[in-house]
Image (tube, rainbow, N blue to C red; front, top):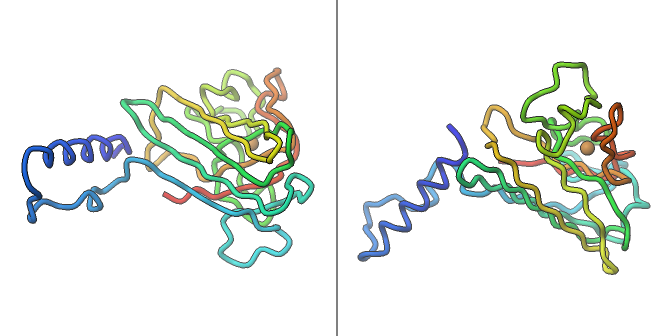
Length: 198
Ligand SMILES: [Cu+2]
């Protein structure tokens, strides 16, 4: 089932309630099988000291200025996927690369695997082919922080995520994402990672 079905179900439920009182037999919105939006929040923990169960790792302490956190929102809307990222606590006035990756985060930067791709590149990973490693086939969320270390980014794709094929993590990289053949999609070392839980 596509995540978008959940959005439709919630809208119908809201519409049905507008004409009269609440029907006690009607299931609450919370029982809809899939959420309208997935919101993931995390505070990055130094990977070297991360306890078991950690879902947001910091690999490079020089990328942040004090405690750093992220909020990632994924929303399906009429066949489109809308993703929003907001971060705080990163080094001010600096550009970072950011992408959604295929695997969950772990203590090692490479644990998150390669980029999530809507149409997977048939070539061995990592994919540096711009035909696949581009912001229409992947989800890129590069951001530049302000004076306060706050950054934000949005991306919109004309395809939907499905439970069988969707990203598992957000990875923040040290530099902005490159687009040239051979290096397309690369953005320097991985500085932080947050696992996406659906
Ligand atoms: Cu990446």
